[in-house]
Image (cartoon, rainbow, N blue to C red; front, side):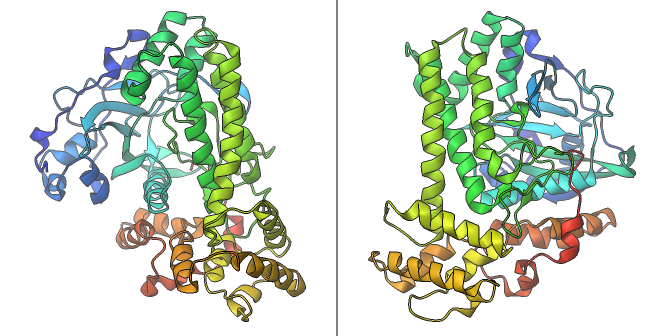
Length: 487
């Protein structure tokens, strides 16, 4: 395990690509930086021991004041469809890729500073992040990991007393983000729409070599590359849907080429079940509403497929899109079966899930807490934990009869099913109103609640009796919280 800054082996393979792929920039250090959070699990993933956070130069490095050998910091350029409209040049406007380090498992991981200052792609912005946005992203990575969903992770949060102007005057902060890759669908769109086939091929070759090495040398490499991206994206979106997560801004520049959740802004975890729920206050048309996410994933993959047409025939790319559609439906149903404690498949399971969703919506039932309560249900026995959540008692009673009949075809004991369901149905999720309370305390100089909530999110299926209030249905006032792209 690495415990000293000087032992970190940093390199930057992306910097070896042609200059048209990025701009080499130096981070702008934060003023009077302080370490607000350090993620020991993420550090362990990198093979780093806890003492590294106390290394005298560590804070200087992660606040942008010091560079390590081999870094070659850079800002990536890419394009993307934002709310369905193509923007020909975007890029890292406030993030700087420091390089890569070998993880504990041998896979190379990107290290990026988010909020590191102005880059050529800042579009008149100040290149800074603020405390609330980095706290939200730090918590999101922990929450997704706890739920078993692929995601970028935060290594640390760095605060400062540097003022920045958003809707109000706030303080600048920096997130140290770790990712398998920061390459997005929009990278490929950038070179496709400019007609730069050689650079498009170089990007594919680089991405395959680093992340899909098993495809190298195949005559159908590009088509299979796209198919695997499609399947990973399908599984990711299905995971989101199963836990009630909404990304909020599924632009093509926010879609990871390795199937990880990327770029947490106006995200949210659903409280009362509502398929038309919109977590992003800026999404006036509802393009990225909760139930739209599987379709948006397909649409975004269609844009990526088009960007790859100079390198692959149309037919296998269309087949990749069809594979996505099949996989996202199958993966979502499989996740819902697990939430219901079903270890076998039945042709009527889809209807059982659909009828449940209709009941949850009509009765405004808390999505997470319903499934946790359902763990207590035993066929033929009253279950107040479930029934008391519904105004339509006849409706839920009828559904429970159907559910009980379906459980009768399972062979697992009630005790085994209970354990199985509790591992699939979290007691705690990252609710916006709790995140808001954490943010307010951090902004006031107190990180105690921040640390406690992060610990709960690491193990969301446990009971945590000392924090039972965080598992309660969201209060009415939380419905009026506005989360936008600046979040």
